[in-house]
Image (cartoon, rainbow, N blue to C red; front, side, top):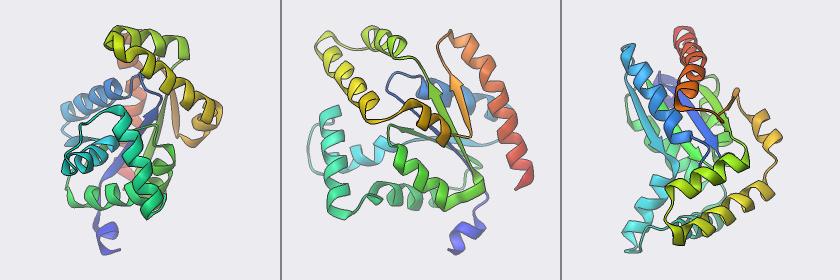
Length: 198
């Protein structure tokens, strides 16, 4: 509890479907904030699962990330990964912590409940056809179908409209990198305003 009171960081949670542009947006925000003199670090929710997979001596594959992620939540509770992330985030003294959560939507809600007004949630909303094109361009041929099926499963499980409502800002990413850079300006301004209020 004392750690939470002393913590002066801002938490920017970026979530969305695979291929929506979360990592790209995280890098853009980090660069723009660093240019303004604000120390920033990017975290990926899946990295905590990958570290656990490594300790087991298993290969790091999307299938193992999903399987081990679900296995540990079943064994230790739904909030297992989120609690682990919260603990580790409190250990680093960085002003802005950008957390790329991927499809760990419920975990992001728990992080928001822990850090409250210091959390700014962004949903990267990208149409499925654009996501599938990006997967085709970036994925090995033998992995493309598995990636497509994963996105389709997530789309079946989650309502994009409801996901948008979870966020403080939903950003549409269906254009060029330059367009995403321009759209990110309002996010940077909002983070700077949040920083002034804390």
